[in-house]
Image (cartoon, rainbow, N blue to C red; front, side, top):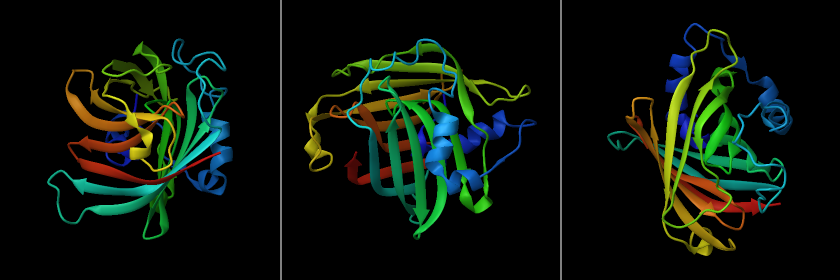
Length: 259
């Protein structure tokens, strides 16, 4: 499994540089930019992505409280030494309910000085663990090939998130290339205690709970720490912090739009 969404700016390129060595080359971003939602539906829907057994529930079994939800905010990306020249970008992340089976299609766009700077596309489980992901750097006009979840060793259900509980997601991912090397990653999440979701973003119904997650590599070495806020009204996790050896990314959510 690959890091999700905004965290890609810190970690995914490093992972992919090893996976893609000697394999498929970069992908042009023109179709992504021209029609993000069409590109997402064609390449990242659960009907198009072959998902390992036991990952998704049957249609309607894990309902999400929205058809489409968009998060708007600002990210501060700082180096490992918390240097004063930290980069500030704005972002827009859209979550699309992909069948009330736990799957969401995610389209994320980042902007630097008001100009588009990056995009990422995912098929994701409740916003916590991805089944397919692709990251694009718009200034280079190229994107990495799509990474797919190929097999799972552990995949816990998020149909009923509870306090002080553990949820693990362990799997193997690779690109669709006969020469591609697959890699293992284990995401281990622990829930905290519930609080009023209005404390997270004013006007948000229901309750919220923090999910603190840690990614480990195949050798059990900690790679990344992540924080999500789980919103019970939507059965969805929103990313708020990512920390790795390369630095820290803090997401300040400004508003949420629900359709």
